[in-house]
Image (tube, rainbow, N blue to C red; front, side):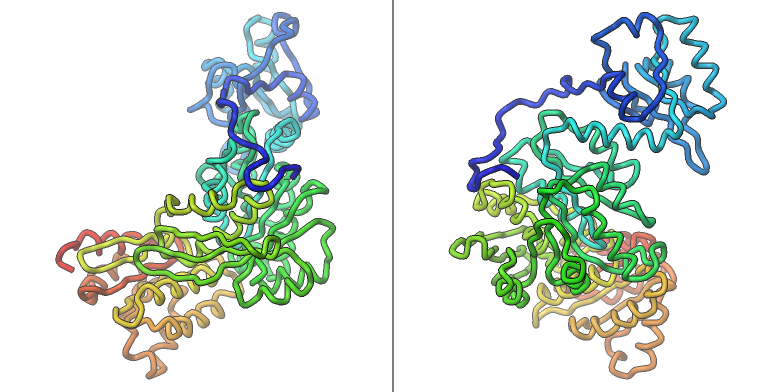
Length: 512
């Protein structure tokens, strides 16, 4: 990365100035291999540029490039007139679009008409522009992918580095074939570090996003069975996640989850031609250290309703300790923070400053978010669910509840698991026992198999509270079950809207 340690590398120095972003006509033509058409007035303007690139006429600004994307049920070419009316500086148009001739004719009649760039495919052109712009950015790109924990890890890394360097990150869930180019194209030229999330739904997408973003540092948080419905086998999922290295620079760094046996097997079998470090739990450190592999880990992990604390360590600097405290108890934050510390180390920034910054980290809504209703605590983890995140949520809830509080779990189905769905939900039954759950409500079609097992086995009779098709049907019974000082875990895929259950408990408030 070309930076020294302890904060002696890149630093915040210059004020950010969005007006410096400039896309030149010939740049976009070269990046897309498009055919540029301009009025004589614009062709003679040697200082002509566009301030940014847009795919949405609702938010397009004066002189921007408008790229009309086309999907199965929409066609952005229908909004070319609106883009023109709002003062777009350039219109990308597919060569086979029926609107093409209308706007080419406009070049003959209006000297102020927007430039036209004819391309074979506007989706590909949009990604090509982002890929081209990435080559002129000086920013180090940190690309985050994985089956679980992408968003939390991306946000944690950004939080740790943004006080020390000019940094940006993916907004919202801009992590797919449209979102990632949007993230890159909105990056200020003066930005020193961009933390980009790389997501996917179909095969081949991560490799494509890697070639667009060219990560200097890439992170694979985990290889789980999320999206198995679309990807197929675990081997397919592994191949997809590890393809993040396809577009990386030769001197890049890969940060891997050393607790994931599939990732470790991939490293052993494939011997990737790129430097890699591991992040793992304390019990797995020994074998990596024996092999001389750089490794980061957490010691003395503690979680209660006040938050999460641990000591970060690495064999790269055996004598150093980095105390971390987060005002949220979620155990899923441990690997996120350790990935963050590894990135900070690789970038040559101040480790103690980064570790201390976690005290002000704000958790995302509905991701192991701690809520309070009278004397009752609620862990709202209703944003999404997978076997890995359900296990983490149950472990967190069990640790926070301790031995003196009842743990009530409201568990909804895990979706998009394909062939692994039944097995995953069966495994979840045993995890409920290991977490010492006192009462459990099950919601959704996928949890029927859990219900049937629990009804057939007397060991589950004391804890099974009922099965419901929807979250709305369960709310009344959940509220009747809760007692003062209980800890309630709410966990499911977004489809089941279990945030409604959490909100109902909070609304009951002081009665609890």
